[in-house]
Length: 258
Image (cartoon, rainbow, N blue to C red; front, side):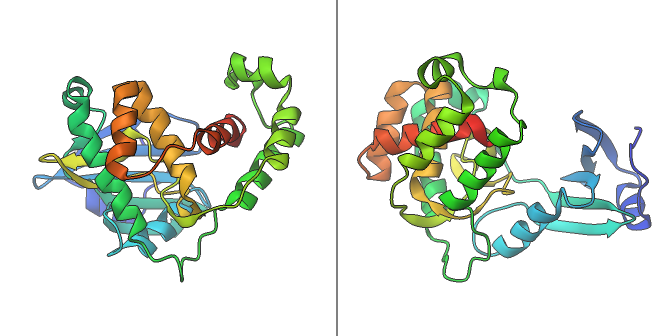
């Protein structure tokens, strides 16, 4: 296969005699490759310097704390980053099996949340609280970094402009319940093996944050993939009462976030 970046000696040696498949064709500053060798599966990410730094640092910090992909190789050479991780066992919680059996997927999502809440944040170096998120939103809104076509028509009809959405978020912020946050607890980022939670991928936005942020992302994903009844079951098994204001607040924030 064709690489868009020059490979290091260590990466070249690692992928020798392996089966390679490019699994995402994204922007020109990154490339993702699936590596299959010796009956194991790995993923290689290559990107311009700085893009993979956060993911690497967070995966390293999370080792032994929660189930995340194991780091095999990390290199930063000639303004290019290389990250090889071992693939998680199993399949996504939004696989066809769970789409057809949604109530079997909910205990796995709840198990993932319980793992998140076990992480001690007293020494967590990653702050992704509402201050951090609102600063990102502010930058997106007032530096014209948003594609307004990515904001839902319903939201635009209600608020009129991204500036109005941002002002609403600032004026209606609330006291946060700080926990460790994965940052994107949507079903494609949760893996299961033999009907048990086997780990998280995509931890680039993890850190200290309000617990309702992860809940909002999960609720949106559960509703889209499993339906409304599964959302009710999620709250029941997690043992919390729905706070629709906080959930809707964070879903509104996400319209401007990324």
